[in-house]
Image 1: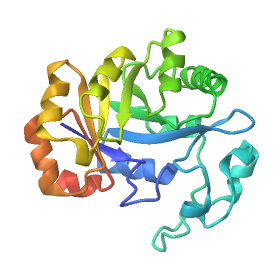
Image 2: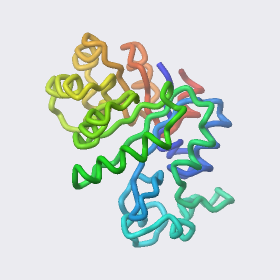
Image 3: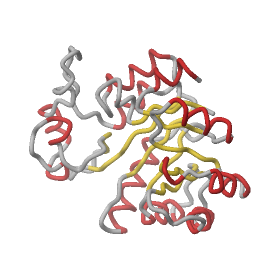
Length: 237
């Protein structure tokens, strides 16, 4: 079971920032999960929310911005012990830091239209060239998966599940051509994990910050543990 830093290491460093990705690099972890959105100028950025207020304190909608606006938003403002500004990173900047990683889960956030999905996924695949053996493109949004299918993408894909749809999710993942399911932790029962493994799908479970739960999932043989506290997990697993 690999330890995968969630949004870098959001419990130990500012989330989805270059400093956060360097932090897990320095820990010796070589697996990470992060989120991707596309701005109005079509730049791809690493950002979970569609609003800056939670992480920067500034009330601004992400899709109103272009890439030149990113320098105004510091995602480390609530981290009093963090001594540097952490602006919203471009995907290309992030990939330079994690180019030696063994496993990268790129979560594409939901979009409104199929056209947006097509544009985003084409750009994403161009930027991920060279990462075909390490990157898994994940999403909750079927539109993203349909775009990648239509484009005959060479990248592995994972379906993310946060609602209790039980075994329907396994059928959906297979129909979408996925190699992996990302189960939200409360849904990852022994039964559902065994059923997922039975059809040869890899399993990531998110977000796991309790050491005893992590040990249980390790014993069940999941593929990846997505955690906010990778340093803590390294110390106990």
